[in-house]
Amino acid sequence: MAYISISLIACLIILTVCLNTHNYLKKNEPIEKITYKEHNDSIPDLDSLWQQTEFMETVID
Amino acid sequence: MIKRIILNASKIVWALAAISLFVGFFIGNQKDKNLKEQFINSADYKPLTENVFQKDSLFIGVFSAQGYGGEITAIVEVQDSLIQKVEIVKQSETLVYFEKCKDFILSFTGKKLGSNTQLVDAVSGATITSAAILEIIQKFECEYLSTSHPSKNKIHLSLSSALITLLICLSILAYFIQKEKLKKALRFILLFSSLLILGFWLNTPLTIANFAQLLTFKPLPLFSNIDIYLILIYALVSVIFTKRNSYCKNICPFGAFQDCAAYLLKPKSKISNLSQFNQLPLLLCGLALIPALLFQAPGLSLYEIYSGIFDFTLSLGLYAAFILTILLMLFVKRPWCRFLCPTGAVLNQILKLKNKLWLK
Image 1 (cartoon, one colour):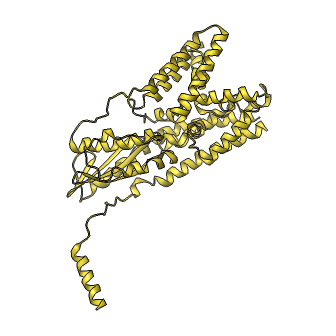
Image 2: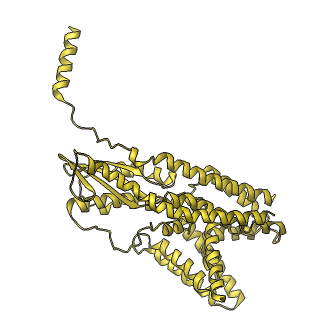
């Protein structure tokens, strides 16, 4: 019983280390591939919004 | 037969770990350079300082700080002196601890630079990870505002450091006491206090990740992690200058937990065929170190069940390992220490090596 338990724990440990490594590689894709995207919460272009509204009004009319 | 297989396998694994250490040094530090080069080579961004880049009124900073599992790299975006975004691009923290910090990272959005970030509290239960994120923000502030780092070279001495020092002093005292009864009583007090203080309260047992941090030359900041360094220094000094591994015997909280279990379960003291597994911790330790050294991410080596059992942050596989360890406690005393613990294996190996050199 003790013999099996130790073997099982060893297998679980190896599995944990493999999973840790897999997760690490998955979430940390090579930085060369990351293309930085700027934060895009700037105020929308009011002119284009106004034109869109005018267009919608024309369609509704 | 099994003993010989484990012994030969651990020799191969340790050779591979040594190779990983060298290879890791060459490929590990390349990543951050590549990220910065994205901004340096970009025509839109103008380098303002070594790590801060400017595009019109937008300022981008690429900074790194040492977390528990390894280096954390983040991009900090600032406009009109307000933090717009903190994006973590590289980290190897334990998932549970990193999840705890997500709200902490978001809390910086909209904050004004220089608005007393040194007063921000770390996340309880993920202190080192949140401290590293905070350090990244502070590094940005220092470089952007050209001020000095507020927390640099400032020792954080607290009640925990005082209690750990007391535990170490008691352990040294136990080494010199000759009377058996007094020694036993002192050891009982030591184990019980370390279970409560280092285990359930601080949750700072020594782990293989601490050794991996030293091997990869990515140690935790000394001044804000004085507790861990106190334990690490004591463990190393005890095996180098005395004939005993006093940390495992007197201070390790999981060792104390196993001793309490042995007192209650009263296991059979001798199971002859289990000695075949005596070299197993060395094999497991080497295996765990390979990815940690190769990818320069010490956190990958972390498989000790005691690193998460006191605050219930283990993965499913390690909970299963914990249940099996409790089952083993019915048969042997301190089964984790004898057959599985990587920290104990490293300390015992240093002790053996020192004894060999001493005899020569």
